[in-house]
Length: 396
Image (tube, rainbow, N blue to C red; front, side):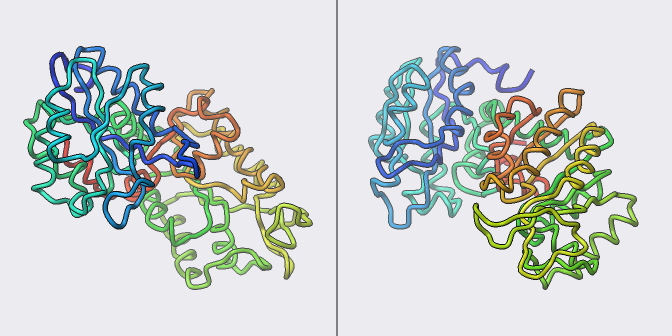
């Protein structure tokens, strides 16, 4: 059993760092509440034990102190609905009102503090600010994996003001860390990493770290054309980072030396412009004509990649295979998502991380058909690059 599951919060005030940085429309309605729903089990466990909850989160990137646009009070009605209990609100995260309302909390009560980033000290990792926050609760729970890669006051510094038995990960954070560690340090082979997205430069570090661990690395999306060009293929007007051709060849050489198989797409769905209604055709990747650009992997690539995925025991997926937001170019990403789901059904462990891949499994209604969908984005990427995340290190 985990430390959090074993802890009895009866009569205790749990100060929980959540990631409620959700998107709002112009009328302040939440357009995607994934991050909020992800934190509900942690909050409910504390309440069920007979404890009370003080929630703190950042929201957006306010530049000049408090502004209504970035106020967390917009989230109170929806959070109350998700929890089935009224949520109280403090108009600051430190100061008199926060202290009074926290002190007056009764078992079963939930208090949401105002946006941490209304104070510059949060992002600076200021110790005095972290100490003020720490005084509001008896136990500190970090359930914000999405900010684990930032050394902010509420994620990395605050933990030092709590005794070892009074600080812990929440259920969401535990799930993220356990899943990530399973893939990085306990992967059953064959281990296949599927890396997509637009640029090689965004994914160099993750690929280099995976060369030490994976058996197969599948490369799709815009970044594939930099690798194809590096090998001397004609890629037409496809996306390409000309200053990264040597690096691409270097990665291919390292992979060969380590016995890691890198899979590049054999063919592409090409278009005569970057548009939803462009003319399209499927061509081999060794000869894309001028004026045509690859916007998705082709049928041969789908077949080859799917075979590799379906025969894998551990799968990490970060980044789409093409411009899946446009219907004409979504077949590659959708096919990969279905293959990951099929492998998972056969017993593979699959982790999907990174905004676009997560959006894809949600769009194709496959989130419950993979082992774990990370809420982390940037944090997950940095974890797989082999970096130490301050929010995790603070509680280890």
